[in-house]
Every structure is written in structure tokens, then in C-alpha cells.
Amino acid sequence: MSLAKLRKISNARHAAHIPIEQLLHDLRAAIAAPTPTENALLLNPTQLLPPMVREETLAPTPRVENLSQRETVRVQTRDLDTLMAQAEELAVTRIQIAQTSTQTDQLMTLWEEWQTQKQKSASAEPDAPSYEERLENLILNLKTTVQQNSSKLELVAEDLRDRIRKLQLLPLSTLFQPLPRTVRDLAKQQSKEVNLILEGEDTLADKRLLEGIKDALMHLVRNAIDHGIEPPEERIAASKSPTATLRVKAYQTAISLTIEITDDGQGLNLEHIKQTAIKQGLYQPEELEAMPISQIQELIMAPGFSTRTFITEISGRGVGLDVVRTQVERLKGSIQIDSTPGQGCTFRLQLSTALSTVNVVLVKIEGITFALPIEFLQMTLMVSPQEIVKTDGQDTLILGEQSIPVADLADVLELSKSPIYKWLAQPNPVESDRRLCVLFKIGDEQAGFFVDQLIDQQEVVRKPLSPLLKRIRNVAGATLLGTGDICMILNPPDLIKSLQRQPHSEPLAVTKPTTLHQPVILLVEDSPLVRIQEKRLFEGAGYEVVTATNGLEGYNTLKTRQFDAVVSDVEMPKIDGFSLVAKIRQHPEHYDLPIILVTTLDSAEDRQKGAEAGANAYILKGHFNQDALLETLGRLI
Image 1 (cartoon, rainbow, N blue to C red):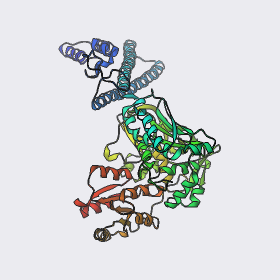
Image 2: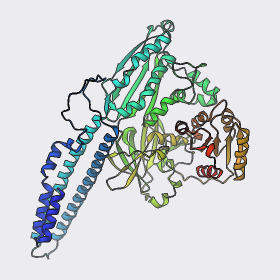
Image 3: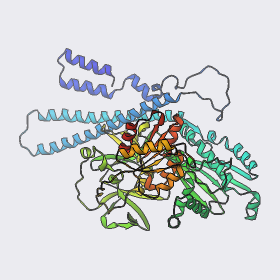
Image 4: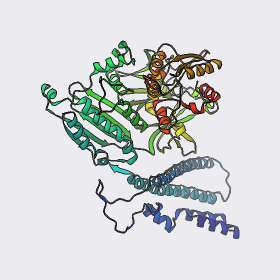
């Protein structure tokens, strides 16, 4: 219904004493009958787009050859983002209208109950049947109108979103285009014979997704040629063809894009990986012996990890596969490794294609609603305390032949530590000792999380976090529910990592408070003058300080005792500050350890390096302020 019709009806009502029945009739007619403009929009929703995006007849322009050999229209990304935001608002409105329809159903139910009660009563007003008939018709018409408008709005919103989404898609051939030449040149440099096979070049994906994964794909291809594929003479000796096969395959499901890089080379050498992990001090031999093969394989993606004794120009100077993992996780994706010794190795990148919308299941934890993406959801089930056993101090659910670690989602999110938790929380009355458990599976890893209530499954619009909040773990974004409430969308890969880092306790027990102690700071600084100055500052503030003169010494010192925070310089011998932070973050027990970098490097690139490595704060020595440093340290601890 147009605003003009509403104003006309309203003005007529004020100008004359129109019966209420006539007014309701006019109002219903105005709602039910769309205007010619509304009809046009329903038939052609692209009219909602600005002229620059509509399909129009353009003046002939010089032909410019492109990868897809198709006529294209250049559209600025910010304009597409604006249009997508408008379409997302339509989706939110559609959800609200759907809820209105639900409320109308409830009203009809109440009406039927009232009718039943009235029939039991002997007394009734003389004009009650006439009034009841008009009221019933009004409710029925209102319900029909809401349903019609909801369907119309859904048609417009879905069509608009699909059209805009298609404008943002590119074929994977644009991503694969440089690979043949790269493989040919690198194979020639290494005196190897490699046959490259590309599959899925016509698969479409979001341009931002392709740009984000480009460097990771190139690095994996280089790594396969440099590390995985053997020279021809070694392949012949192993009864293989002298020409190796390198296959890059892409395929898409409803919710994800998968890219597989497979070679038929020598595969991963697990013994070399273990020896390197021991040499670099990442794990002890007994820890590696008890570690699953999949976890040992993933060690090659640790910062600075390499089984080579020298650096090559092929797969990068000092840059390991940790770069690939970082880029994939930044896109909210996952990476899996499947290797068979002597037969080859496959790296499988799984990336979410839903950059703006996501299918979720809504759950409640003590009255607070959270959204869990169903992409990694395996199942939900009811679990009793008797089904939980202890395995190496971890609460574990035995499901068939599988042992699945479980935890209370409220504990994993550390809700009790939030200052507004007590204000928001609404304790759920316990009606049974059995609890609802949501199981997730990501690659070979599984985990279960206890929640209080399963509310609904729906598609929601995912709003990205601001730059200041991107480092908050366990949270992938936020959405606005149909009720108008803001709901956090949780990140299942982060949840599984948080569960693995969670201190072991009694099954479903309340965490015991920790005793107070003097905080201990590890100060890593190669400048004697600065080291003495900062040490006195921290000791004067009540901290115990342990010092190290370079990054390697600091890393080794961290293993000697428990520290509450690390304050480090960046430019240091042996291991710089960025590498030190990255190595510390590789250990699950140090994932939450506060780390502050104090340095003279003030470029935006250096700040970004610090953030990506895992530092919590970045303070410039040129703007050094003792109070600011102490305040930052106190806040993090």
C-alpha cells in the first residue's frame, strides 16, 4: 500500500464522519491492492537498482579482451555493498512480517477459544452475531493480506539479492590463469617434469573470496613442486612415471567452495616432521608419540616450521605454510591435509561462500540467544551426566566408537566473566538431568557443546565485526533478529580450539575461583637501557619481572615457569618480536597470554604484522607513556 493511499483515507476520516466499517473496508482494499508502481517492481525488481547497474543499451565502445570474453559493466564495489545492504534490510523486514503472521495465527487461536467459551454461555448481546461476523472477516482478511505482502516482499528481496550476488561472481579461471606458466617455470628451475591439470574453472565465486585466497593457492602450488614432487630419476626408481601430476580442482556446494591441490609425489615424512618439532622445542617426544597423525601433519603449518635445512626461492624465504592457514582462517575457512607416504599429498581448502547471509540454528544459554552456523553442525542429542566420562582430564562423550570432547558452551564463552552477564542471564529451570548437546565436526575434529534450548533454524544476515572487534575469538559476526534483538553468530572452529584450551574440571561443574598472586611479567628487550627502565617501571607497579635479551632466549624462558604477560621489543637478534609472538601462539596453553609489543616501528604494515601474529597491544617507543603502558598491561591481565 502506498503512503498516498494512507494519507487519503486518513484525511477522509477527519473530513467526514465515516462509519468504522467503511474505513476498515477501505483500509483493507488499499493494503491488498498494490499500486501500478508496486506491480512494476514486483514484475521487474531490478528497477530498485541505480541506473549504473541496470541492463541498458550502451553506446558502442572499443572491444577490450578479458578472461571470460563476455561484455561486462564496471561497477564500484562500494555501490554493490550498498545495494546488498539494502537487500539485507528487506530480508530483515521479511522476517518481521513473518512474525506478524505468526501473531495473527495466535490471534485466530484465541478467537476460536473465545467462540468455544461463548457457546457455553446462555447470555449474548442481540447484535453479537453481526459484530462477531465483521470481526472474524477482519481477522481473516488481515491474515491473508499479511501473507500476500510477505510473499511479495520475499520475491522482491530474493530476486534483488540474487541479481546483485551474480554481479559479484567471477569464474575460477581468473584465479587459475597464472598457474600453468608458474608451474612450467618452477618445474624447469627444479629440473622436474610436471603435468598440471585444472578442474572446475567455470565454477563461480565471489571476487573478494578469490582475491583473499589467491596468494595461499600460489604458495601451495609452489610448495608441491618444491617439497612434494620428486626429480624424474627418483620417480623412476620408485616405479612412478617420470612426469608428476599436479591437480588443482575446485567445486562448490550450497554453502562452501572447496579447492583441492593434489600431487602424486612423496607425501609428508612424519618422522622428519617429528624431529623438526622436537628440535624447535614445540613438543616433547612423548607428546608426539601420543599425537594423532592428522595433528602431526598439521605441524607443517606452524610459524617458521620447515623440514628443509636450507631456504629456497621457490616456496619462499622464511615464509611457511602458516601463511596459508592464516589467510584461510581470515576468510572463515578451514584447511585439511591428506597425505600418503610415497603416493602424494592433498591440501583441501574449504571456504564459506555465504559472505553476507548464513544458515544458523538459534540456541539459548541461560536466556541469552546465540546463533550457530549449521555448516559444521553434525547433530543434536540429549545427554545425561552418566554418559560423560573423563579422558585425560577432559569431559568426553562416548558416541558409538567415537570419543567426543564436550563442554558447557557458557563456560567456553566465559560468560560468567562478563560484567553484564548477571544482568542479561536468565537461569534455565532444570526439569531433567539430561541436557541438550550440539555436536560440530570440522575435518577430523569433533566437539560437543551443551546449551539450554534449541529455538529455531533460519537464514540470517551476517553483519561483520568492526576492526576493533575482529580479534575476539569465538565470534564470527552479529545479526539482527526479527524481534529487533542483536544476536552474536559464533565461530565453530574457534569454539573447538577454545574447548581444547579450556582448563579441565569436573563434568559440568562450576569453575573454582583462582587464588591471588603477584603477576609475573616476561620482559624481552635487547637494549640494556630500555630493559632496565621498563623493569623498574613494572617492579614499581607491583609486578615480578623476568628478563630476556633476545627473542630466542625469551621463548625458552617462557617454558621455565608460568607468566601472566609478555612485553617484547620487535627488532631483536635471533628471533624478532613478530616471530616470537607467532611461536608463542602455537601453544594452546599460551593462546590467551597477554602480549604487548613495544617498538620503534610505526608503519601501518608493522602494526598489521603484530596483529596477525597475535599481539594484544602495539605501543610505540617514540610515544612512550609509562601510565599508558601500565594501564594497557593492567587491563589485559
